[in-house]
Length: 405
Image (cartoon, rainbow, N blue to C red; front, side, top):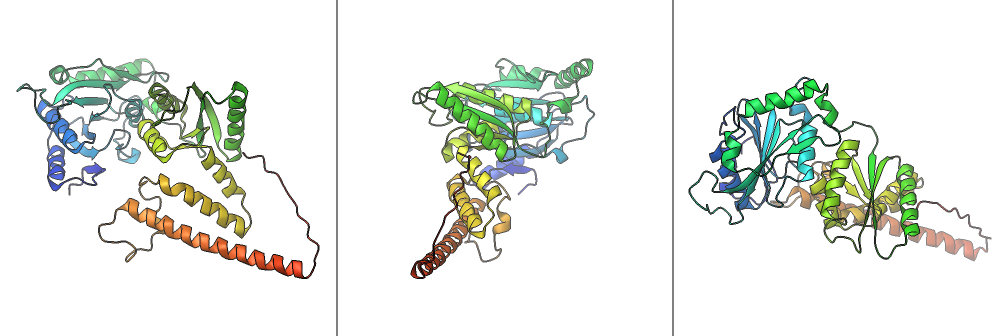
């Protein structure tokens, strides 16, 4: 497999991998954002595998990587980006297909800002699949958008109106990039200012949803309590976003417009964690993270984190870890190497087992071990209690109330 192929390759046929390899080997014109034939092939393979595909191209026209996934999911690690001066862009452009929506989504634009990309070209494939409508150069592509960075922290991205593929490929890309970098230079604006704020702790953006079953006072009390919970967990609250709806959106809790607002605000404030004021389902968390590009948690996870920090006794630590793993299990979504240290190596996985399945098995085994330990602890305590009762030893209890939800 080519070293330039990245992303979610699970389930792809060998023929799909071969097509992606061929894309990675095609050189693009340096003075054009993309060649029409390359755009056609990118849209065709994306529609065929029912997944977005991104191609990252340097200013010499070399395809440095092809990745299956959204621009947010397939970002180039900072250490692999070309080192450019403070007033310059990275020298890499991303050409991406987008299967849902008609305009570049907020997460894709945020990924462009985080990497200081020269530009983001978004191709919207035709809804009729890989069947060309005609013999024109844009047969596979319905329309395209060209987005680029501007020296404005409030609105760091500018998106073009919808373009035909012919209009897109006729533009002199070298002149466009020179003009964009000149704007940064004239404004005295350094492009690293567009990148996320680096901080040791979590910078949290709170999201509150007021539904019909909540009074204004109860809603505000809940938000105030969540602020204290987040601060107790050792994080910093940078902003609170609110929305009023009759009921939560089944897929994203809040509406689509509010999701885009959250994504943009999180980037502007350098937030690295989104916390909702209510419990959210695993599917809602996945949908939100795919659109916002930042980890999303709910109130319950914050409380569990506080308990984990406060637990002192062996029994307390066991019970908190058990609760955390039981909460985490249905929310697993393959976060790279996060759980790899828990594996036992050779002999622990079945043939053909995926990383996500391995993580599930590791957690399930750990849950079983913890449950056994908790059961043994409870049995031990029951025996001690029985001995005290038989010896008629007076018993007292100390109770402490924790104001943590």
